[in-house]
Length: 275
View (cartoon, rainbow, N blue to C red):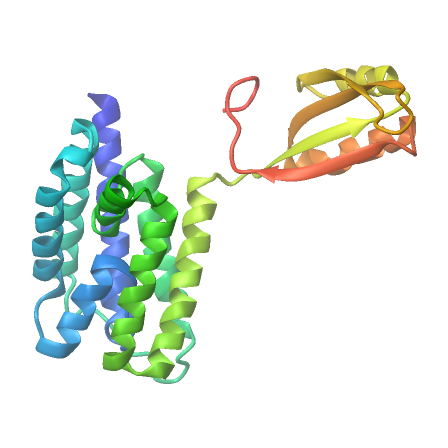
């Protein structure tokens, strides 16, 4: 029960911040968005319909259509997100301000707040409904990936909205959407980017000993064979925090200056010393 209440509290905070981004910066400055919220904003510009009410109605229809595609827990939290976000969008109508002195501030702050709100919601494992449900339907019927479905829908909504808000506002909307995606990635993937390191060295045993001595990280050793030399080698694989990367590089170089080191980002790591 404590975990459920904490999850609902985070969803509530995220939904409120999301609504502030929409009503305080996006709508007053004539910007649109992708997905279902983008459609509600366009309807507001065209007909003056309440974004909060329209958002709730459109999402309610999608939930009814995609009911069988979501698990029970996902459905409960998705409905919670839809209700809270729609309520806060309705509650915060007329709260916004028009940034006439610097039009670039509007998409930056809109993207920041919308990204923070959605990032908090996604961090709980919930979805915002809307295009996520449509993407699930496309995946089920056409075999499309979720990311492909969401991207296509967002592009279609923004492209359609350009006929209402104009080209300049559409370009600024793309800035907002880009900032939103980066903020969501930052929050969902975690603040500490992990690095996966592959090390091939003639002194693999000594490198391994040094890593074990100076790092509290596990290292996996793979037997390998040189494709050209046909000599047997050992390949070391480890995952470290970004802040540990420089120290690890220097340690490897100290043991074997000719060691081959390949480094790549990984989105997340858990277990084995990572939380």
